[in-house]
Length: 221
Length: 221
DNA sequence: CCGGACAATTCACATAAGTTTGCTTTGGCC
DNA sequence: GGCCAAAGCAAACTTATGTGAATTGTCCGG
Image (cartoon, rainbow over all chains, first blue to last red; front, side, top):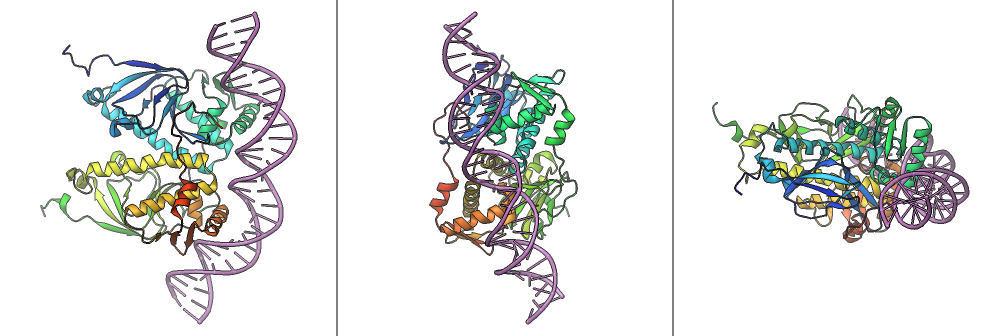
């Protein structure tokens, strides 16, 4: 009864698809580490327009901001069945810096996710539909690869074309058009919850445009 | 010679329009607090496409991430003549929590700017050109008002229509079209580096769409 | 007071992407 | 194994926004 709770095994929780990991303005005294499945943080308008702001993949901390703010700001929904580990703040603070789930590590992961938003803003503002989708596919591929979830250029891809649409800010119909083209050109193959990357280099050429190396006086084209 | 440098008067620096406050990958051991003028953090493509990621207004810390990362990631350029105060890390760390420029305060300001990106992502992804511009004008109005820089519904507005375009992700020509309309409808008047808000309520109705109050299963329209 | 550069404006036209609708396929579940 | 809802797909049509290019306005410095 008097054992150190900060060392006790952490609680695992599961969510079904479309279930909420968090609702707006909900109080939170823990952080989730996704073990399995995908989740998304989003904003939704009464007229139905939805924009996904953050994607959480296996291995991601969801949502580290809770550490600093004590509550969720935006809803988070499970895109698939999700298994996650609950990490109470006390537990995180008790970890030594080099340990897993230590404060620094969690904050570091948080910064990485936040830095990524710069890229998303750029994408939404200045890239064409094709570029946005290629960029997203590259991002997912590399994030999954970093977690050893890509084998032989194949990885799970649980996003529906509606999900894609709400990430890259275009219509579902247009997502379909673009994916058809990419498939036709032999770049990627999305089929049955799986993605097969056939030509990663080409995909990167289309989606990961190089930033201007030398700073010039910035002006619109 | 042996006085406490963390209490010495901080250095003030000035930049002319189009001058860089930071370049990509530059090492930084200080944070700037903008005293006067506007600056922008952006990404630029070789083909000329530019997207502004963050706007820094008087009173903002620019760029707090430097505190945690030790270097800039994206270039920052002065949109006007800028006067800023240099706050070395050592100086910030020496401040007590309740003091100005203390670590908590700076980090807090950082979080506010980062949280704002969620709104920008939504805007770029799911709002029409008119909505985006109205939203931006509302944001600027309220940020300036918070710093007591709005008098009688009038405030400085140093952004060119090219700048607007690179913030809300549309073409300069279209910015012009939309602003004409807004002026014609008596909502706002942009003229000669000044903005006059004639109908703030209407502007908010157009730009600050309410988030969906009750979480539903999110789906594209 | 003038010249030059930058900013705003306008117009005609091009096009990427949205909308609507319906059909087909897939896949989870009883 | 078959049913049903969800997801994928397709075609026709509409539209918001982009492009290119020329004109006008404004302002700062010499």
